[in-house]
Each structure stands twice: as C-alpha cells, then as structure tokens.
Image 1 (cartoon, helix red, strand yellow):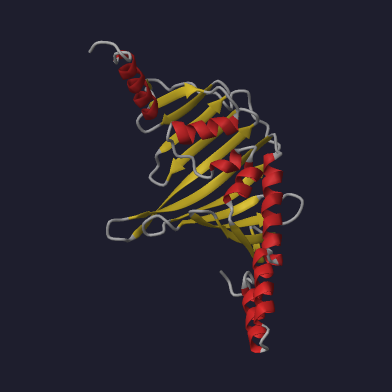
Image 2: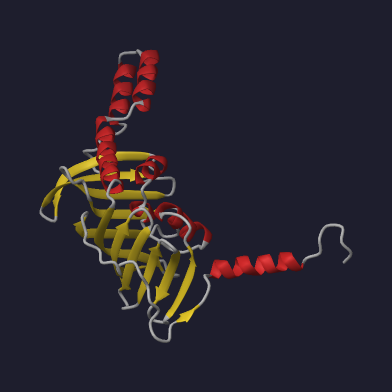
Length: 279
C-alpha cells in the first residue's frame, strides 16, 4: 500500500498520544471505536467499487475486450508470464459469449445460448456441450463449480455482481486518482479471503472497470493476474447469430470431463445391488 493510505494510522497515533498523557483507559476505548469504524478512504473506495458494480450489473447488454496476462510459477520458482485476448459479449438474461485467443495462438469459445453451454477448442476441433436451464448467473456457477471449468473474472458478467463483491471483499482502500486511457480514474486496492486486488475505475457517470490486477497470496510463489479493459459498449447491436454455434467441418463432440465422471458414477450406482439384496 502507498504511504498516503491512512487505514489504521489514526488509530495508532491516537493510542500513542493517549499513553504519553497517561490516559490509557480512554485511549483503549478510542482505539477500539476507531478500529471498528472504516476510514474515509475506505468508505470512498467502497463507494467507487459499488458504483461500478451497480452500473455494470444494470446493463441489459454489453461487450468489452480484455488484454490479460497471468504468471505461471515454474519448479525453479521463476515466474513466466503468458497472455490472452478475450472478447466478451453479454445479453441478459441468458446469453454469454467469450472468445479467447492465447499468446501461443490457440483459440477457444465459451458460449451460453440460452439452451446449452458450449466449449469449443479450435486447435483440436473438439467441442463439449451441456444443457443450460437457467440464466447467466446460474449457468456461470454451474460452469465453474459443477463442470470445473475455468472462467476468470466470472462475477463481472453476473447480475449479482454487487452482492458478490460485497460478500467477497474483506477490506478496501482508496489509493489515488490517476489517469488511464486519457480519462480520470479511481485506483482502489483491497483484499478477499485469498486474493489481493487492485482496480482502476473510470470517474464520472459511466464508472467502468479499466484495469484489474490480482495477486493470489495463498498460491505458491504468489502469482499475479492482470487485465486491461477496452472498447466498452453498453448498447451493442448484436446480430441474431451472435450467440449461436455451428460446429466446424470435422469437429468432434465429447462430454465435459465432469459429466463423464457423473455418468460413470450414475452407471455404477445403477448396477449396485439395492440395500438388503443378495450379493
């Protein structure tokens, strides 16, 4: 954190002054009250974060491009950075498309088309599908939790983004007002249970996320992820075919790995003798 951040500083100074004049009991009480109350900088940072979350979650449709980088810790302890570009399209309540091109040129597609979830890998020309029976929020949870698939920054496409951030963010501070992409921008920093994060959010009536940096402090080597956001469009003109998928020639269909495990478990359970049945 920068020295200009004041979280906790006033508490320490007040306590020291109180000890010097011998008012130890009053100092302890004042310190307890001050520690429980958020600082002005913390309140300001929370307001900036909430404004962004409310603004983005209220959009019926939007599209944005991300340029992202992430560190992979090697056995030697050295960190190697890899990157990717993502084009994200959201049409609530139930359509989502994420087109990804990685730094090695590999491409894949994640698609929710309101009827099914599709993941397509262009390099292997293989795709997997699973039924989609709900909106984006529920489908994201199923994709990550049940299908065990990777979807970085998943809360940003969810209608429940404000609640997700309120639940996850344990502490937050205001760093500075700066400039990013030629616009005045709020720089805030905070912590969740496992991640240290920084966000840069545009000032004004359109508080959009312009940059995010995450440090996974509980992972070995404390690897870092960052993403720059550009070309925000909250009134996109999506074509009817924008959220459709037609398998390319020769593409092979296969189940998600977790679906195979589930099916195998169900088959084994079906073959198992019922309770009390002779073996």
